[in-house]
Length: 214
Image 1: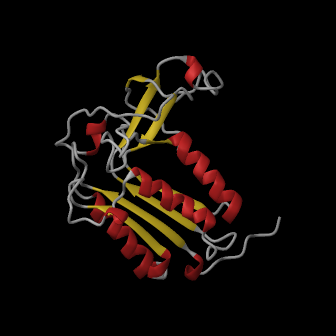
Image 2: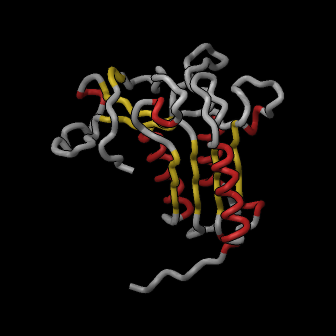
């Protein structure tokens, strides 16, 4: 097997998401972590700044002083990730770094029929029946149609990452600075928070993770 060639920093692309301003149980330091990651990419790895895209939520959700297009809402996060697939400037094989700092959560589906993969890893400490999710800034609020905005599940993320890898290659690094157990684990000031998954998921209890599949 031929070794893959080493690529320079001008071939690296990055998406940085940092969320402090959750409506319920806000955090401290996640935006700072994303900005620290940006400084590392630019100052140490010499990645061109124009190849780094950011969604930062330092203010409380709903703050009218924040540009709606730049907040880490569910729609903006998913749209930005999908754009990696269609961006003509990203060449096949370019390294892609995705960084997320914020709340994560974890759910147990209510019955076996909700998960077609359930049962494949019955002896696994983290069976496929668990759903892990990233919490966007607008989680548990309502969209323009009145529907509750859900978290972004690992199923959705896996599907998006698969699309990116088909279009741009598999040099993808996904860094998660979050916890997938009870929501309060990310901050000492937080209390347990309810959350909503996309229609079809029926969580009924949470459990502290023993091992993450990611």
